[in-house]
Structure formats: structure tokens, C-alpha cells
Amino acid sequence: MSEHMISLTDVLGTTAGLLGQKLPVEAGPDSFDLSPVMLGIDTETPIRTTVISQTAWGNLAYRNGDWKILFRKQSKWDGDKVELPEKLRLYNLAHDPSEKKDLINQEPKRIMAMRAELMALLKAGRSR
Image 1 (tube, one colour):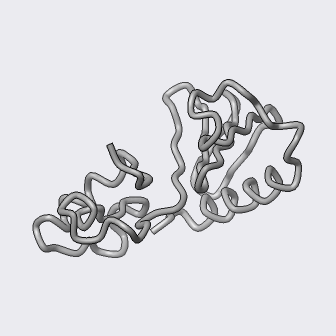
Image 2: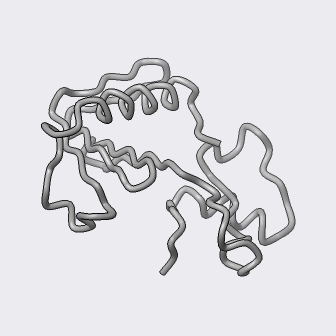
């Protein structure tokens, strides 16, 4: 259990960190080194504040802090081409960790900001 945002993609960066190695710039573009958290060296400073994930079914999720936006079943990412569907869901994980209350209609500015952040990260091809 951790208060830190952790993703499966961080395994590569964390393993390298535990071995005292730095990842080359082109390796693990979304993998952060969480070894300081695992070793209890620095548990205060967040290492990552955002995470992107995609399921085998094509669902895309973007989390920024306590907020998570879901792009359902039509999202595609193919290199430079990114398409985000209009069917969205938005959750505040601090108040709703089970993702039961969709806030899509209450937070239009947040949705636009998060979409723009996600598009910029996808266009860059990396979050690290």
C-alpha cells in the first residue's frame, strides 16, 4: 500500500534504479524509478503525478492526481494518430475510489484540461 501513484510501467525504471542504473532516454518512455519510495528514502516527494493506461479492449484512462478520466472502448492510438471518443467518464478518486459517481456533467473545465494534457502526452510519445 502506498500513497504514491504507481503504474505497472514503472517496473522497468524501478528495477534499473534498484540496480543503480539509469534508463537510456529512449527506453521505458513512461517508466519512472520508484526505488526511493520502495526503500523508504523519500516517501514525501511524488515521483509521478499522472499515469496513462490502456486495456486490451481499447479503454484508455488518464489519471492526474485525484482525478481520473476514462475514454470508453473507442480510443485508438497509433503512433502520431490519436483519436479520443466522446464517451467519457470522470471520477474524483479521493472521494470515490470505487468509481461509482460519474462527474462528467459537473466538471466540463476539468475534462477539457485533462483531455488537452493527455493529448500532449500522447503526441510527445512519453510521460518521462
